[in-house]
Amino acid sequence: MLRITRILLLLAFAAPAFAQEAPDALVKRIAEETLATIRADKELQAGNPSKVKALIESKLVPNFDTARMTALAMGRNWRAASPEQQKALIEQFKTLLIRTYSNALTNYRDNTMSYKPLRANPGDTDVVVRTEVTRPGQAPVPIDYSMEKTPEGWKCYDVVVAGVSLVTNYRDEFNDTVRSSGIDGLIKALAAKNGSPAPK
Amino acid sequence: MSHLRSLGRCGMVVLAGALLGACAAAPNKADPFEPWNRAMYEVHEAVDGAIVKPIAQAYVAYMPEVIRTGVANFFGNIDDLFSGINNVLEGRGNEAGDDFGRVLLNTTMGLGGLFDLASMMGIPKDAKDFGITFGKWGFPQGPYFFVPLFGPTTVRDGTGTLVRYFTGPVGFIRDVPVRNTLYGIGYLNLRAQALSAESVLDTAALDKYRFLRNAYLKNRQYQVYDGKPPPEDDEDPAPPPATAPATK
Image: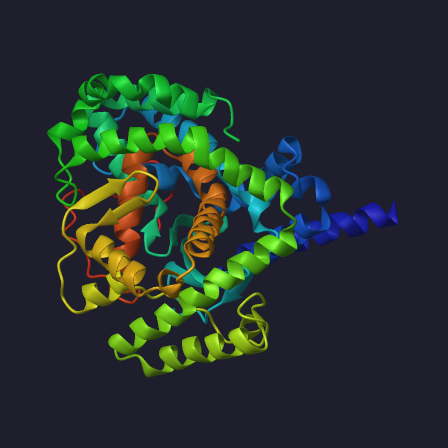
């Protein structure tokens, strides 16, 4: 009984503590915890699908603002979409990102990350956290996380890998697809992509 | 799987071009030969998927990791030499020093480059090439090309690759079988290293050709400008999202 109250207390304290966590500290904590989990788990390294999915949904997804990412990736087409379409787009894009990360995650075992000092003012609500990933035998790859402050703490809304922005790359994809087959066509294309079996 | 479909699709490039009419409606300025490139991409998917990729997958699956790492280090050591040369051409003394220091250390103590001692000692690896140097010198990038079995490139980057090819130490080896074996292993090494990125591309992209091209061009631009590319005249700025939480 005492034990459970103590845990509940800790949880109650922990939640606001995380919410106020600085964006660079948040990125570092999530990255290190994720890497540690992968390194400690042979099944994750082997790509056990349910384990990988669970890790991503518990560790990564809560720290991404998938609604904002979808809106940014849609660009000017976002406003043309009805609320139902927007909802469907967010859901499909989120699924696509989870699938992509699931595919990539098992390769991360040998990665080490370094974290650049955060250049931001205390009152900033939109910052870029700069990191570098090193794989053995390869030049370090810079990865920047665009973070925004929300009532639920800092959330990531774009990832820029060596100059390639996830959101911008998808904006080109989404734009072209909307132009040729409309917003419903894009939703259909995303759903088809998400429904297809994972490539090896 | 996909390569089998690609084989079937190979003759349907024209049809695919019609389906992808959007691209004709909005041509990418950097990719004026998109229909040709898309056809080449299909050829690549078919040939690579049927022959090269399975060999690379077998290499990763059956060759012990320690040997693959040694092979990667050996060719990485040659890359370091050229990264150093390009850092000199770009007037970056410190980076060139790191590169040449790495080559010196890894070639001697690292047994001809098989071991990457320099990385263990914390000398950072760089990845400069002639394409980046030409870009810094002001050469325009030129049209984008997708070359089967080679991958994405531009006129500028392709020229850089040719320069590298004709100056590369492997080309100086007189013994033809040895030289060709080294070329083969070097190619396999590169192909094997691309496998994981490729599987991400497979899951991530609605249109692999377009996704790869856009990412390639952005990344090259980023490298030419040392990580600070000039802001593009974005014709399509994202409006503030309607449903996402307000940030300002």
